[in-house]
Image (cartoon, rainbow, N blue to C red; front, side):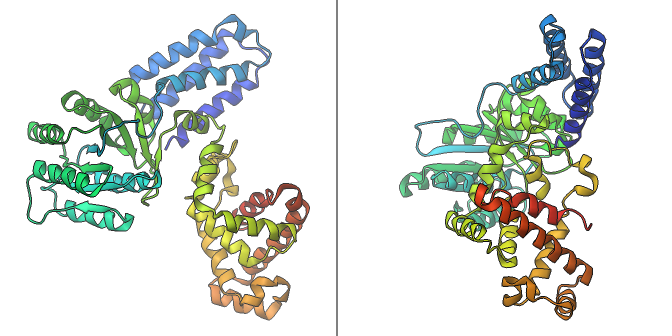
Length: 449
């Protein structure tokens, strides 16, 4: 999401940086490109107009026009105004003393409410909370079974009284069970429709009255763009919405919904769902999103993903190996698996400053399938070969290629790159505690050259 917009904006900034001095004509040309980029990204046209007007007012200030670094000044102005679009609210859930805390999940059918309920339960578990799930969607086939399955996968308890088909009774029963068993959060997965109707709203209002929720989170499918924002506005008017969860942001959504929701609906974005796994739900951080959008990276999110995926003891053991120049193919395979736990490679690279626009990397773009080939090659080696790569002669390379379904050339390439990486680690390992490792790994995943 937002990749195309990010590329367009960075092109505009590059053109501005090429100017020794800014003129009103230069600023207007840049604003025209920014306006088109935002509209093509499906940002609400009223939001675009207000945004461009604010940027123009600040960019045409004489101090900016006479600046020795006009390009940097424009980038700063655009960044500030984009942050203003999201308001000053922080992502996640706001503090409350209510126990158990009730969270109602709202949205139209197919937006991802049930999946998001499971993800949110797992997110809360990582925060040290104990969540109880309940489905009040008694009309959609298998909705209750789907939540039960997600609860099982996430290790969460699901309130599911057999034969009870009254949504309000199910929600009230979950609240009572949470109080009796000591759960501090109840997540209510509500029903949706293909469109908004009075029957749905009446049902949601009754559940709200019975459970007194602290949070009413509207789950918006990022793929539907402005339609999702319009629906969120109607839900907010009829039931009340405290925050928005943007689901499916890892798809081909143009991203304008994210930049429009706060201004149009008047409620903050609380979470974003960035994948299909239960772990793929993140609290929304406006500053991080804007930094990635403008090509500045998102190092904080990258660090958080790394901390979640990397075991401290394993990291210390690896650092010791690097210092002793004892890094093996077995160690390399384990590091590949750790990287995969952090999410898609494109997502990880997008968090690195200057690497957000992967289209400009062309053949340097990491290939997910290459990960599988590398693991297959290493997996076809014997334990001795993984520990001592110098044992791998010509006949062994042929055997490894046959066993991994690859070619001898691919095996040779992997071994050559591994040797090069070991040389680099020998030089950098002691000085940076293994910090040079990233470049070597990414190099081995880039294409087939």
